[in-house]
Every structure is written in structure tokens, then in C-alpha cells.
Length: 306
Ligand SMILES: [Zn+2]
Image (cartoon, rainbow, N blue to C red; front, side, top):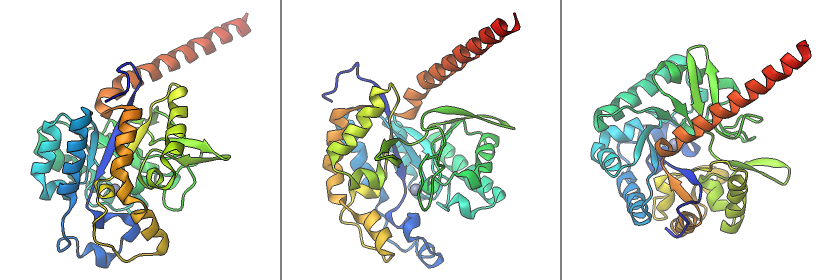
């Protein structure tokens, strides 16, 4: 770790799923083969764990319930290494295709499986393909009711699968009828007049690394926290190729061989930790800002009332 220990701390996250579970290649036929396909998630996640150990970083792993059921030892190793285990749901279905009841069942099942494996509460959630959007905003209250305290699924961009254009791009508190939920959106940045995702995944592979670094530095310069994400399959250039549309194949396979090297550079250029380590100071700062704003409004009201 070459960065100064006084450099700001950002959130490092991984969505732990098999390469064949991504929504871009999703079909009932493909889903029916999940049990027959070669599992690569364990080996790929181990690669990440080794990389993190070398850099002495801890991260948050959103593990799919389906994966935890079959690879409990992997989840135990993640937790034992000091990383945070959070939930990626159970069956990796887009929320936009689920009823509220089916969603509730999915996030409840995943939470139970993960908590049974690690013997500790699981309080964070990330939706498959970030599909908490205006049409699925009901999911936020379901998460509160199911015992989740924070979510990292709302991406304030325009995209063909996910996105909530105009949503707040940094940590904020969402008030639902059942209570509050902290929302920690994956990082986005303004680029050529549009807001684009820069916090990881395909975007991390698509743009030249110096562009990514510049955009992330801008977030840091604003005093905001970067929320970076990646999938274990993105460090696996040798994975078997799947059938799909040219766009899906491009998004999934582009520059896989460069990811490990880019991660090393990213880890040198910025300082990272798990959400669990970063969130308390972020929520305190948010509450301080809210209190200051409320006091300002009150003072203004008093002046006007005179
Ligand atoms: Zn996923």
C-alpha cells in the first residue's frame, strides 16, 4: 500500500456470483443448467482474497445465497479474513421481474443462509444488476422490514437494464414507512454532460485506467467516498464463453485479462476498506449536515417571524 495512511478511505465491494449467473446471459434454459456448469467462483474469489491480503485491504463481499449454500467454506474464509459478508439476494433474479412477495422471500432466504454460515448479522444488500429503480422502489421498504440497515443498489444513471436518473449519488438516508435505510450508491461521475457509472465492473474495463483514476479523484476531491465494485468472474479471463447478444458478450468479456493489473494500480492510487469500517463515519457526517441544515432553516424561520 503506497498511499498515505491519511488519504481518505473508500468502500471496496465484490458481488460474489458464478460467471454463468449474470443477467446479461439469463434465460430459463441457462438457469436450468446452473448445477451442471463448471463452478469457478471459489477459485476466482480466492484470487481476490490473496490480492486483498497483499495490499492489507478489507472489503465487503455481497455473496449470492445460492453460492453460499454450495460454498459455505468460502464464505467462512471471507469472514475469517476480516472482510464483511453482505447479501446479493438468493437467486440473482432482476427485481424488476419479481413481485414484492417473491423479493421478500429471496432476500430473507439469502440473509438466513449467510448468517447461519458466518454466525453474525448480515445488514447490507446489493440487488442483482442494481435493479432498485423508480419502478421497484417498493423493494427499499421490504429490505427494512427484513432487517437490512443499508443498501448499495441505486445507481443514478440512465441505462437499459438498471438506473434511477436523478437519484442522490452519495450516501443518504431513505425514509420508508417501516423505518430508515442507508443508501450507499455505487460511484458515478459527470462525463461529457451525462452521469456515468465509474465505480467498477464493465466501466472499469471499458475506459482507459487514467480516465477512471481522474473521475474517481474528482469524487475524492469533493470530499465524497468512492464505492467501487467488481465481480470475481471479472478476474477470470479463461472462463468458458457463453452465447448471447453481441452487446452482452462485449460487456461481459471486454478486457478481462487487464482487470488484475488495473486493480493493483487502483489499490496503489486509492485507499480502501469494507463498508462496515467506513459507514459509521459517513452516517455521522450525514446526520451532522442534516442537523446543521435544520438549525439554519429554524434560524431563518425565526428571523422571518419577527
Ligand atoms: Zn450480481
